[in-house]
Image 1 (tube, rainbow, N blue to C red):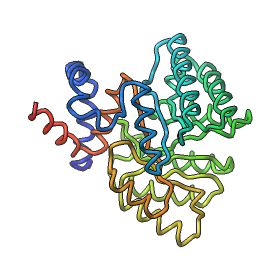
Image 2: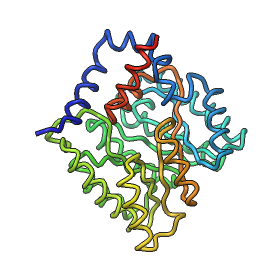
Image 3: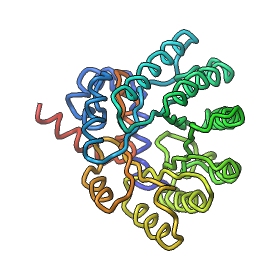
Length: 309
């Protein structure tokens, strides 16, 4: 039986597909609360936010919002925008890497197209001393995403990381298969609406799987990005890495822009590496709705802003 929180999450993700909801949010959402989680609709605003975070001691990553382009030409435009982003971050001497979705690179048009586009960006970022991370999308795209990741690593691109979601039943097996590559992995719980056949629907199961995967990854020789705002997960990670004497340069904590900023600062004061994930662009609606679904209490934040208008 799904929990009340799980039902709320499913309801929010289902509502995200409603045309009227989408139209309303696209018109008013940034003023109602999306700006809390999105650094801005332009690259200039994102750069300004990253600079401020860097000055406070945080690492960052930058993501151009968007997914599921409908043509190779749209993918080409996304590649050009990411080239601009990468060059800008390096020119500004910002402590920042980038994250990217393969559907933005043309995955739905073909795996070869997405891999070619990623290789182009990885070549540029490697020349400029930057890493990139392939974000994980819904379960339909997991197999192709991991296949492209492995192929890029086989081609010699060591500046690319990947993401695994603990909500998916397959993820432990995927992690076991990736560990021999000494990968740079971000571990997340997952923010997509999935069926019971492919995903755990009970929060306790998702959490338990997250802890299992975190320990597996930290026990390997790669780099682990522990992406969570859950203090219980963070405390477990600190206790585990302390007990096992895992060097602090082998893992970091990652949190989203605008979420739990005090917790981010507290971890920084304890000399942990903390990365704040920033995003920008006009296609912020799907991202924002997933943030609401991750923590349905955020809907109250949205409602309060709506009442104040």
